[in-house]
Image 1 (cartoon, helix red, strand yellow):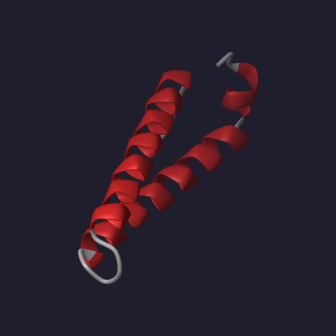
Image 2: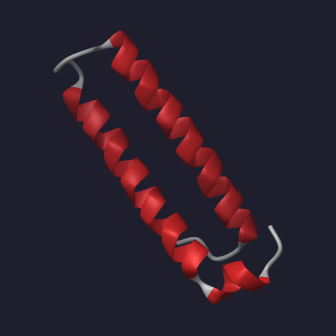
Length: 66
């Protein structure tokens, strides 16, 4: 769970890294190949997006400088 601005920045970096990893997989293994790996990465991206949304909507995010 994201609890402060530092965690938020770490989560954003992790999200960027996962997105880059997914893009590399999509280029190197198009179609149905490596489907479970792609699905796993998409699941991690969705989880991070959910956590980021919760933090962004929290009072702490509005009061703490980024």
